[in-house]
Image (cartoon, rainbow, N blue to C red; front, side, top):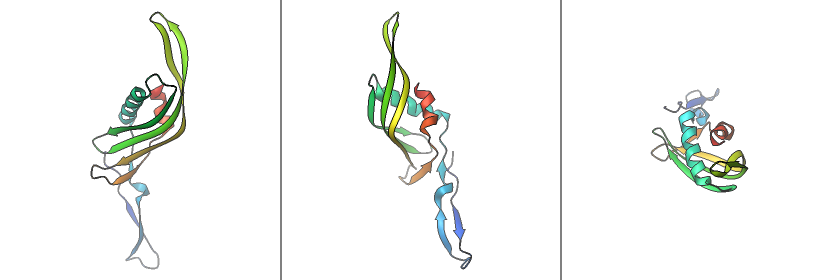
Length: 122
């Protein structure tokens, strides 16, 4: 998936000179496979902990990314045939950020949402 192109916003006083380049339109769209991959790595990092603070990396063909977060993990302790299960029932972000860049290291905005990631974690 190619990022959307930037557009130049021109001044009404000097139409031949752009005021600035609007980079808001250059956004990486995070899709289901990206959320699944980030969730898989994050669950491995959380393991059996009730608290997580750290970073994970995910490299897609279109971009490289780093998810950094501090999370509180709520678990439900259940008895099952195999013993006791500590199933995750909720994850509350204290703080998080998802940074993306192109393969050349140029930062690019993204539309990542923790609320979109959360169902893949539970």
